[in-house]
Length: 345
Image (cartoon, rainbow, N blue to C red; front, side, top):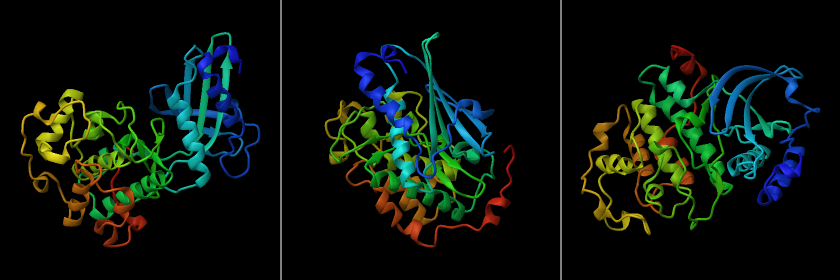
């Protein structure tokens, strides 16, 4: 890469990115001099802020992968922080090799100096569906042990992130992947970040419907921001509709407060940009009547994810020890998934 393509402020980051990609073997034997020409591009799988994701086949080993292609102008701004962050986080997590976190195979990069364009290709393991697609195409009601199987794997992956001081910050059904063999994997680490329990982070994270109140109110937050997102996802697993479908940031808090009640006393986030007097006093509704098919243990688990105070909200480690996941081993015989009728998958 030519240094003059990048802004002065980003040269240090670009050097680190180049070194990172040069040494990107991510565990296991180093792939032999792979280039983009070694991959046959298939169907498009998705689209993100900086590029597209495709199914590709490695012509060297005959295996299918997901290729996340990021194309950007080689301007003063350089490579976006989220791209550098995602590569760094995935490299770190891949070397630890957790079964519930998507792994990174390698990273390829090119610079087209004639068009002043940077291309970065992240080659990752491929999964069959994201959770959103999965839920849209299976029967309306799935057995609770199947829901528990999905949630348990989500929690194992999330606890792995948190144990490495990483907050995902963008958990949603589209970033949770599902395979036919019933494995569930967390993906898309563009907004992930290392944390301490007292850190204040940027607030423009997590897709709106899954965003915790302390983030919306620009207050301090910690790793339990991911647990709020998990609670919202659990609701969708059981009900197939979003829990808090706010149309914009201004209405999102109203959506939350209407269902859970307006926070009072110490439940109101500390150092938030708004006071509780800004909002009407909503009493909330009974969540017991608003969910479908949850056992008492599942309902308690769900409610503990949606506690307003981050200090009292259930963390990922506590979640793994919760009665809901401990009642029986979190496993499902393969025949259970095969019996589900896939309409369009």
